Image 1: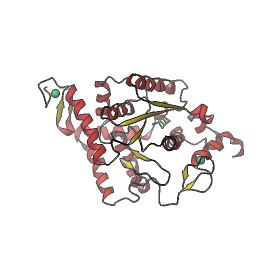
Image 2: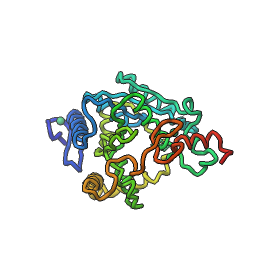
Image 3: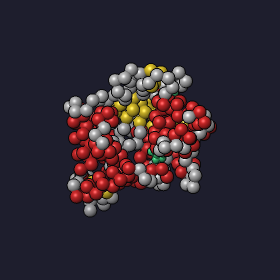
Image 4: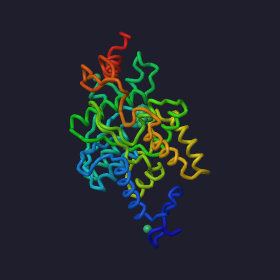
Length: 313
Ligand code: Q46
Ligand code: ZN
Ligand code: ZN
């Protein structure tokens, strides 16, 4: 099997794009498509200061690598969530991230949650008042809070994450199953800057997981292969499996599902397009100063207060 662009042997076939590439031309295609996506959705400019949220996994490290290769000004941030029982997941993922940044000579900030707020994600999630809160909910809240805060403190123009097409299609699938129109209105490759919320972008939203994995492997990026232990039973994994099954017989269905949704959204089928919150007025949290849609403490500070003083609940 020969590459479509040269005489070399191919290393990958992209059925949904009808393309076959050798290593060199796959990497060229991947970087080209990353640039196309950044332009297509007007994510950011060459002069933008880009904060890349990295987890030590293939997607975020590939994203950081690709943006750097394309000449963007990037700074990585890793949050150690303290998810270490049995698996040492956070310890290991921090090490993979540090190694990558060290080898690539890229600037990295590391935030250790336990040192910063006194709690790890499992401790926050299993605090008494929140005994039914899933770790992923606490984790999402904490990550959103710190990403916004760190981007503001460092005067970054945009925060980028390594979400790929499989992630986006699975979220879309879940939101459609529940007809969650508020969330449907907010799912997009770009969330504009708005009243205290930093601009957020997903440059890899049209790449499948297979494509980002291939980029990581062909670039010899050393990434953590273990999944977070809390992701094991996540509904999203089931949605991904269903979509992958469909993809086997309907080539390109994931990309069509996501891109036609984006077209429908652009045409106004869902409200609050591109906004990060509903139309409620934005207030500032009296404790941390971050934006919040309700009066008093923001959700992050409330979670922290409950974890610090669970008996008062
Ligand atoms: S890190 Fe956090 Fe994920 Fe682990 S606790 Fe859930 S959300 S699964 S991206
Ligand atoms: Zn080639
Ligand atoms: Zn707050």
